[in-house]
Image (cartoon, rainbow, N blue to C red; front, side, top):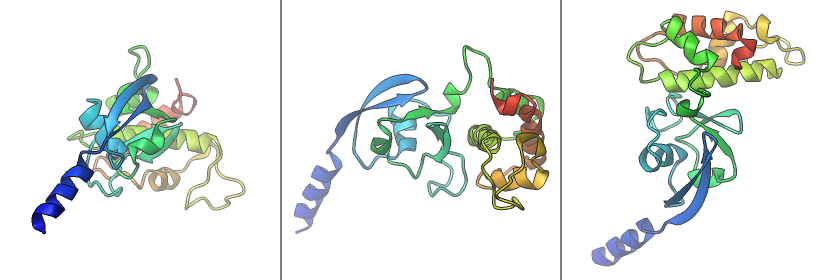
Length: 190
């Protein structure tokens, strides 16, 4: 019976599906097990190691990428579910060798220590400013019908909006400072 089960497991694990992912503006062909997470597809199959595997449970934010402009925890997303989406990783945030304003702000404000969480922090912060510019409220927004504008984001709002990203080194004051600096660049846009 044990041999039969291992053969069934082996057959189930060897099944792959060919599909396309559009990552950082490029169509990439992949042949993956349909249970492969977006994070594993990026890191292990497309050699894009910027997104980190921290907790692998969607609790730390180290794997944050943008899917159609929305921040997404790639460890919780199946790659095959995003085959028609625009996926942006930290490697694709810069444009024409010019750093994104959030990347520049993190460098200038020393918004990192060990650097492990930094890609996820930057991706989340850039998307968070876009959300705020679009009028999306947070859990601490006093009047959700009238959320603060980008220039009106309080420190409490920024901290709440970034609460899904954990920095084990405790670089939070510098991360918030970087967000405030990038906010001055049209909401972190180029």
